[in-house]
Length: 158
Image 1 (cartoon, rainbow, N blue to C red):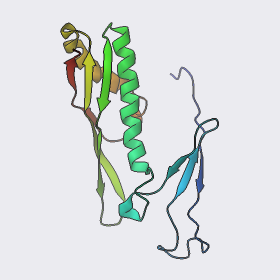
Image 2: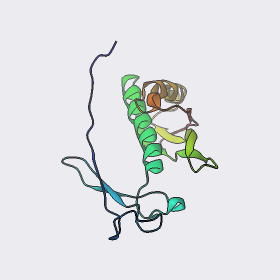
Image 3: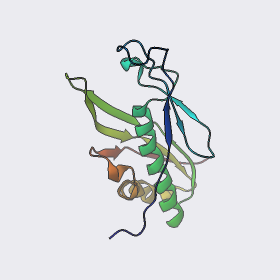
Image 4: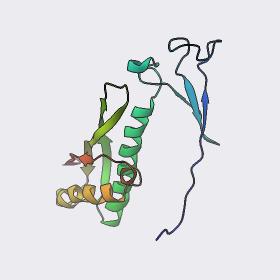
């Protein structure tokens, strides 16, 4: 049963026409913008391996970022409900994409590596277990067809 529906609207605009459109594979840039009403425009491209601009965000990085961000937001929510005081959270997430001989590809998994700082040593065990629940609650993790795992470290603030 669906409780409610949320719609998310973005505007994507290709900005890489060098004057000849997509005349051939090398004649155009992969640059584009992603716009959301009321927010800064994000400059994006494809990965450098696919003729993109490595100074701009690419879809693969944005997917991994979405997973890490969603997990963190749910995790912080769950910690606040459980009286776990988080004072710092950093994640170095890694997405593994496999390219096929045909040129297509897929993500085989994403590994989240959050380093969480809590205010008291007594909070560490519960803080670690809440990552599993956050993963189950994350809207983005529930929408992908590959595993999203986490390898958390929890430390106590000085």
